[in-house]
Length: 327
Length: 287
Image (tube, rainbow over all chains, first blue to last red; front, top):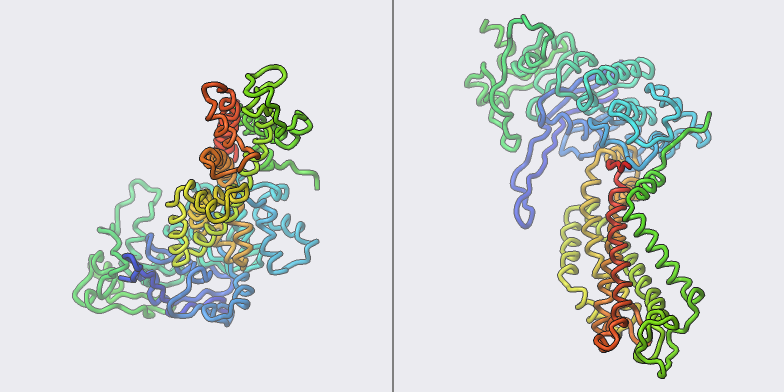
């Protein structure tokens, strides 16, 4: 299996501007030195709290934001340094499904136009074959081909998300960035959309970058998972390894926040205290240390590097598995 | 493939507008007014410029339904003639403001940053000039006349459109469907014409009807002060001005043009309110 996307040392700072002359007074460290890769036909889950920079990673890959440094290598070419024309062609192979199914579809366009826009723009098909392709896409995501002539407001949230998936697929993408695609949906509908995505991956062989804030959803769909905290990747491992053998205290905290359907279950794990620190002024040393129950002097001074802790299992922590030692 | 039923936005909005009785009646009144303005010469073939000194200042009668003025001219013919001027000044100035305002507002709101800062300053500066002053300035610079009054009112209305368009463009720009259009590789022109402008149209239509009403009022005020349309041509405002001199002897000279202005402005405002609801997808009008 080859890598379809490789991200190396990606950095994105958002300037904070103040005053009459909009002088830059500080920077928000949205994404700070993040590296990972995604294999072909694989789902990579990216989890973390709100504001940890996971959505920014998605938008950087889509080139909706320009990265400050680092590279995004898609199929051998660095998207950050491609000329505009080449980028326009390449980017059609990478598509995105947004979180809010009510905001991601143009309310003034019929479904058929939404689905055919990319095909027309990139001349993926001759015009006479487009209606058939639109019908095929609608069937593929479980909608009826007669829905092509409707407007987005005539659909429910789940159906809209299906249209958003169909829109992404209309480009024949190799990679789809899914930015919390089920967070805005009912739980029953969430499962339908997730199953649809798994099914489409089997059929079409697309790769997903699946961004989410809930561990349960990520476990269900991902092959490998990366955990982000305050713009940093803190743990990265294959899904089963990460869920059974997590080593970073932040991952432990995220996992213990997943509700279990057993009222007699003994409460284990940790509940994080305090707010997520301000990314304008990230803490010194390990960024997690103010909230970490196992932090010591070294954590406060020295920043841990993401290193291979076990084969295929990367952790950025001075004391991996510290919680087990304590027991 | 069998024919599929699709609810068109236009038909939907039209149905909703019909349910709003005041707006619907206002629309009918406006259609009648425009019809009369266009076909007035055929409907009421009396020359509005023909003087008849024997019949000066006649009160309304069967012969002269609205009465006559100080030169014996038929007032109904004058009011019909005035409707041509008043309505066309209103329409042209609003179209002018719409185009100027949309261009300014789109550039500011879509580009953002420094362009936005500079253009917003310009827009605010125009706003600070009273319409009357712009009218006076244009009249002194180029002479008073119909075209200048159209431009003056157009300029005065431009900031309202520009601000509206700017704020909508800057919010729409951040919408996810616009981001998805960028990822689809669409260029700025395609995004503006397919994503930004269509999503502003309903708000703009409402603003057009409200601005048209205020343009009629402004035109009347300018003409009343003598900076507007010049005699013998007479808009509704100019008729009011003429009637002012005879307000105690011949009040009908002021009353009928006044009613014409009032009916048009109220109808436009009611239509604007109705359109606001009718074009909003989220509001359902029952009954």
